[in-house]
Structures are given as structure tokens and as C-alpha cells.
Amino acid sequence: MLSKAREEAEQIIGAAQEQAALLLQDQSILREAETRSQDLLDKAQGKAEETMHGADQYAADVLVRLESDLVKTLSVIKKSLEVLEERRAAPTEG
Image: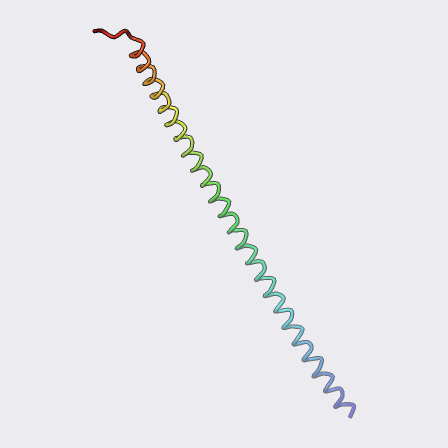
């Protein structure tokens, strides 16, 4: 009877050890998955920041060119108005 109890106890201990080993393995897999997940998230955030920086730079470049074009256009408009003003102010012949 004592040997049977001892045998059952050893089986229970063996099963518990196997289960503990499986739990440790599962925790290891979980940690690895969490690490990979964090790495992917970090890479995605880095890529998003890089993309935003590129988009901001592109927008700034476009706005600078637009400003330059508008300044040139405004200059042409002012000169054209001056020419028209000079024509109106000049005495007409005839």
C-alpha cells in the first residue's frame, strides 16, 4: 500500500513537473512573441515618423515654390497696374 502511494505520488510529481515545464515553455514563447510584437511596433512607428517627416518636407517645399510664384505674380500685377495708371494719367492726343 505504501509503495502504491509512493508510486502515485511520483506520478503526480512527474505530471506536475511536466506541466511546469510546459508552462515555462509557454511563458518563453509568450515573451518572445511580446518582444517581436514590440519590435514590429517600434519599426512601424519609426516608419510612420519617417513618412510624416518626408510629407512635411514635401509640403514645405511646395509652399515655398508657391510663395515664390505668388510673389512673382504679384509683382507682374503691380507693374501692370502702374502701366495702366500711367496711360490714364497721360494726356490723350486728339
